[in-house]
Image 1 (cartoon, rainbow, N blue to C red):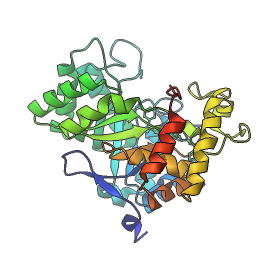
Image 2: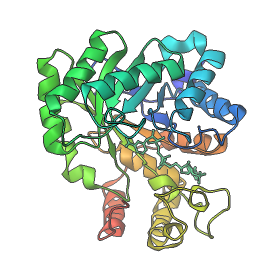
Image 3: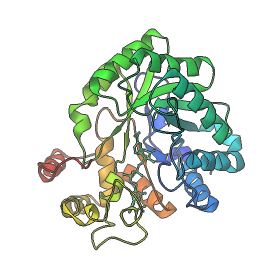
Image 4: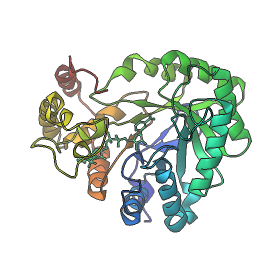
Length: 330
Ligand code: NDP
């Protein structure tokens, strides 16, 4: 599509030269062996046609683990090969991938072996961003960060990131990596109207160190849409096998709060999903949001969040009031 870049907002990631799309397509769900090639192809191609230049993956996404990388690699190879230089492809390591002492966490052995596996599965020479997926309490941070820096020196990654790190470890990781000549590009953290812990945790240190941020689960896995307003649809995530979003949760308190937020969204001329995304992008530390979609229509709906990103002080205050005392969604 000729005009794909006119539709998207691109934001500089921290103090780097890299600009990322405000919306990124995540492949945690909907890219496993339970989905058809056609469905994954349609999602990835629709995203790219609308200026979403970043696809977020991890070694363990599936099911089974590894399947999302394989699917992403297949679509990239068949449909988007000539566009490789227009795309940011990410992967991560840290969660359980293979048996024995080297199949997870943050040793040099794990991080570098896993990256080689990921590149093989995706049939790529390099990833654009390589993340340490979770902190490892038993491995010195120096070792994990050196492994990330060495992945860059080996030409297997262009930039490095961290995910699920505390504020203190984020600061240390940024300092260590700077000393290694490979600046920390980005931190991937949970952030949505239903989980604002980021605002008290990593946010200040990311702004201070000029490191970018990408939110995951910005729609709280679908709770920040209108999809559960009249029960749990059988084709929804809450009706499936998710261990994080249960059927009970999708019928409980969050849905009632979502209905109140939906009234504000309606007054802004937006769907709740669109307003929830615009709200997360309003955070000064946020570079991009990694969104999920089980079908192209959701993606198209969510893209329209970009039509209205501004908020009045009254709208923000009304949202804060509704969210006051709402416990963080895991
Ligand atoms: P979201 O919060 O964006 O939830 C996406 C889900 O919400 C969709 O799959 C769909 O669910 C529903 N949905 C989306 N848009 C609409 C809409 N317009 N109308 C109705 N329903 C809608 O994010 P995810 O939980 O999918 O996570 C996004 C990404 O974040 C992941 O793919 C991954 O890249 C990243 N991530 C990173 C983690 C980390 O540790 N670093 C952890 C978790 C995620 P349904 O199937 O019900 O249709």
